[in-house]
Length: 140
Image 1 (tube, rainbow, N blue to C red):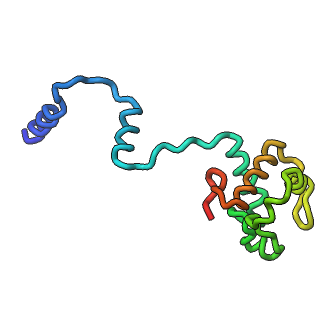
Image 2 (spheres, one colour):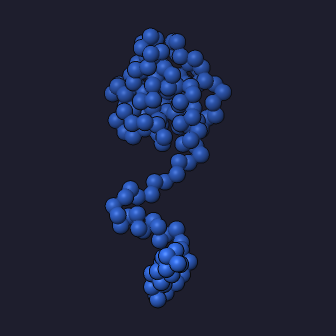
Image 3 (cartoon, rainbow, N blue to C red):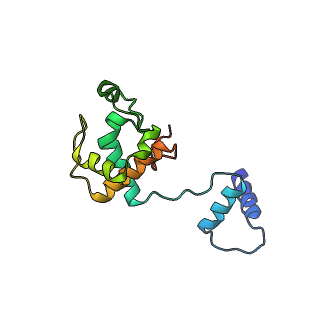
């Protein structure tokens, strides 16, 4: 009997007598913004994901996620800090050539697609100007 009264009370409270409509995603998103929550973040593009994966698999072992060469491997090989201001003076073509053909102890990454290589150049440029790193990569 007690449970029946509880169910009836809940059902009575749900019927506000107003307009009924189907719930849509926008209802939830608006409620989040009204509570001061973080706004929607754009999904990373396929190219950005490829660049992030390429960086993590091929570059981060030595250069680190933030490009500073502060990994154990990077310190052992004395990898230069990619955030140094002099990097801005190096042309994109030279950076592409370095990625594709290697340099000193850096191996060649000649199997990477061209759009990934140019994306890695843009990614490296963000270190030199102190910009945000690629999607998914931790900040410095």
